[in-house]
Length: 625
Image 1 (cartoon, rainbow, N blue to C red):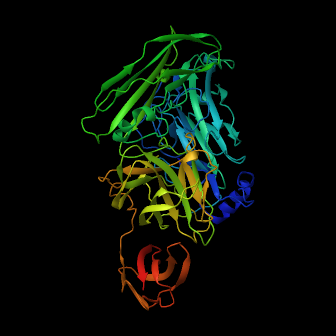
Image 2 (image 1 turned 120 degrees about the vertical axis):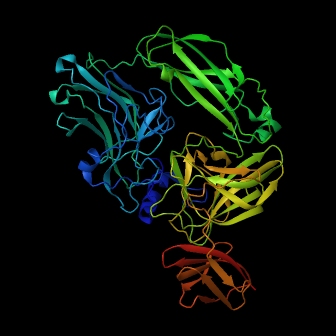
């Protein structure tokens, strides 16, 4: 569903030309940082028939009219009481100016956030679907004037669907055959538009009626995002019944911290006044063409202990037709002490706005923002809308750095990173995490304090999940700024690693990169999804996920080595590459005797990467004396 981009040299060469206007640096050469769709690789299902007639395993529930869905009562997956499948993504971050909070996003990954296909390049295929539970229309006739309406938006905060892509609607006949009755070809972002469809054909008036939305997606350069909202099916409607008599919360409320979206509570307490915003807010919209009187307010509590923090007084105002209002509140005084200083703490801000005397939907009258205080620092909100990657030179490593700040001394014990899935897989591309006290920009100098080598990209099989890497030796850092750096070795070429980019957050002013062997400020808006983990008790992602560090089934002797290096492994070794600590390739070849002559190498520390006959890459470090 999310994360969709095909990592391929052919794709990257096209990206390079697309971003020319955005990628000129002060030295007159092409910049090397880009944004891309999230893990784009649409379904390779065998044609329309299989996509439209796919079976579902969810329990069916017979529904009756009216049918209404604005995607506010569920998270991640559609409400199973209304929908049979789980391939679309329910969220409040992918849409721009939604009708009400919550949309269904169609893209090109399945319910586990995996690409539907990991091989096919540039295919045009059927991807996500949204199929309703059976609806009993057996008691209706064309005279009852049934209309189906919905709002849709192409692209949103993702990338636009191309002209050959489309969003389609199918209805189920009495015979069980699905008939396509509406389609919209891909285009760039637009405001939400409403579609009105009359149900007049008697083939649809039966007790097993259903609707199915499907998107057709092409791999190429887009992740083909469509957002769907506010679906209504009822009798007694007409073609001009387009007004939505609803006052609804819309945009996700901001966090109550100034810069971070998450931090340990002990760090927060160390400078509470400097960490908190001066005011917080939520947004409400009148979707009707008439004046609406509303009452509004908010409550705050600590969820885990159910401790009340604040409750506002009830206020009143009027909303003009179509008006969207941001309601501001001064920041309340935080008075909460956890049982233990290192405990996880979660503040819930619950905002509400109700229509006075109205009969509109009540589920979307309330919206919640959770402020998490846990064992990590973050600028992102936990959701990725796009990917970020660096186009590097062959002989120079690529580095992405994010500046963080500690209000008191603390220990960095690991890191959580959100990697985009890539085709071909990136799981054999190793990288390094580095911690710097300072970097050589804005008058600073590079001050490297810790290196964690030989890590590999890894993923979890759910949406918006980070993979946690534990450091071998936790590093104590003093108060003040530090830099979290992910290093991709030289000679990676177009096979860059892809990092999640939260475009809803403005973290670019803390983001730097290096591909020319010097640091530059990022020109890409959004927050890179890197999270330093604080404390020494860091748990890696669960054991049944892919281990981020490959098993050490490669042994080197002697080490340090003078003339020859002998390799021992439980796997059959095929070829090798030796790189210096700058990531530059200094020697490579095939392995026939599992021994390598290294006499010509200069004394120093080197990295050897060995590929087995099964395609697995093993990495170790050795010293040439």
